[in-house]
Length: 415
Image (tube, rainbow, N blue to C red; front, top):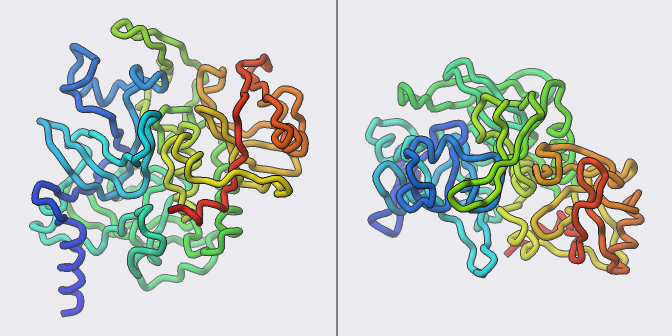
């Protein structure tokens, strides 16, 4: 009887909402792009719906690259509207701000093929209590006891049962009768996985080395994990993680470091694309995306989708305070992470217009002119001296008159 009550409660919270027109749906693709407007309202004339979703450039202006965000397999969204083969969705775990608005935004458009409505899952008598509970920036505590059994990927994982590779950040619900505090060097977790092809819940195993220690709940431990995860992403034995505007995922590496700048003939806006990479252009991170995904993997309440939003949400370093590993270096349109204080290293997902287009860890003197250490950066910061940002060739790309050092531990004070 208790299990029946649990399932009914989950159905109520997952499937139904205050509005009769709203429905819950679960993401069934490893990575799904979220866009700012539907295909029918797109300025891109003459392209099909499939092209609209599958030929998005790697980067460019907001008009040239219409990807705003990404969601992953097993994430639950609220469907607010439908237009043909597209739906307007609301997500629970990240929000953004526009330059001319102050109210948080958390709604996007995506293709219906990326989702499965949960009321259909319930009708097939699938126990949705085996789906991981959603993350919400409005919740400061775990949404339920099941949160303790969630396994989160810190590396891409290929599952042989569904023959699919899942992105870092993908969450699975593990069987409850396991040791979540044991060694993560050996063994595996037994988890539930939904197969969209057969629409069945299966059991699979994920090696522990692919997972993160989500039970850590002290901020210092979580920040240490956060920095460690970011650094591991910056160094790949083969290839690298490419820069993708709006990118919030990683399932595979890019091996060809070649791209080109193009001009959209319809609006004359520039954009960047990797023609030599034959895989989907969905996979990768932008500067905020890599921070947000690594934070989510490490159970850090970071819910900021763009640089404007995180500047408003995080606290700036004050005089007398020291820079700590994990802190963010912000200037308009870009943000980086302090990854190693002793060696003066920074992790970032740097854009194509700077000559990079990839996730990397570099010395601070490769980023700023006349700044060779974090002590020197702190001196610049307190004296309000302008910073000269360098491109890949070491030439001054732009001058930053406004920049901030943001304290990563201030995320625990979010509203």
